[in-house]
Image (cartoon, rainbow, N blue to C red; front, side):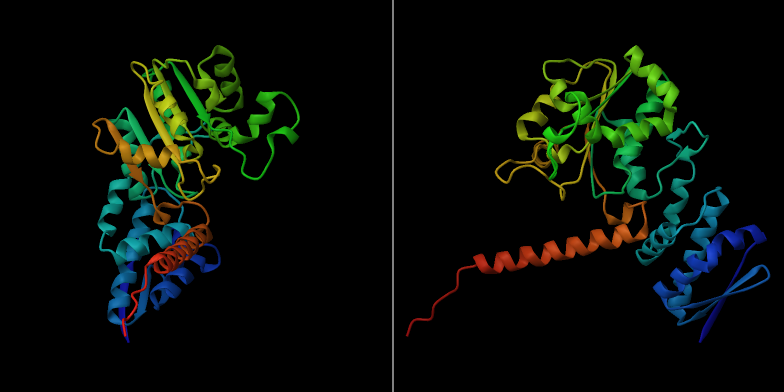
Length: 334
């Protein structure tokens, strides 16, 4: 059995590394088939040479996350392991300095994965950015953070948040109130992100002044949106016509971020997703970026990553079976 030692400078780092009830280290041991022991300010890793070498690199990566003041979660552990498996753990340092926004509680909002970092950089560099990926990858939250930063720095005079009010099994007609009351539940993720960044009191003040507008996509028709940061959320549920209408609302000194998950389309079967078509049609146009996030970029509970992968594998098997069933069989002539 091979053994390698990693030195830890402070006991606080050791506590943060191991996590509550040693949960982080248990995950590391299970994933890489090693045994991890702590002796004062030393961590001893035992196992097969290759596994021990990888585990030591994971520990170094996790210590670098702790050094920049972030807590270690199972998501961090899984992500660093995936980077080590692909030989990319040195890129963790690229995430250290990227603060997109600071919330009302003083918490810095940072990209937590390399995919999120590329997404944030694309928003900064391009007029139109599409963030396409599964649930939990921070598409909407990071877009709202970028919008609030642009507003605070007076690069835009207003923020416009919109999404299509497409039913996903629920019926709008059964919800109480007028049209605005009926569509508010569909806009709740956008409200939550704005409250987090600005606080409820500031949010209400800016809405009353017209600096922030949250509205269903249907309200965008016929408008020209100048000097604005516009976010279209859940764009996979736009039709081809709606997406074209939205994109042509773009005015001077404005920025657009479009987010969506093409695996969660709630449109009727005969309708083409405007997001899927736009990603194909606009992929080679300058000043438009298309960022594809994956299960690796999920920053929710680690179980979400496994759920997404399970669905991806199931869909891949279904596509394979469908392709085989559609392949014509050759008959042998006697």
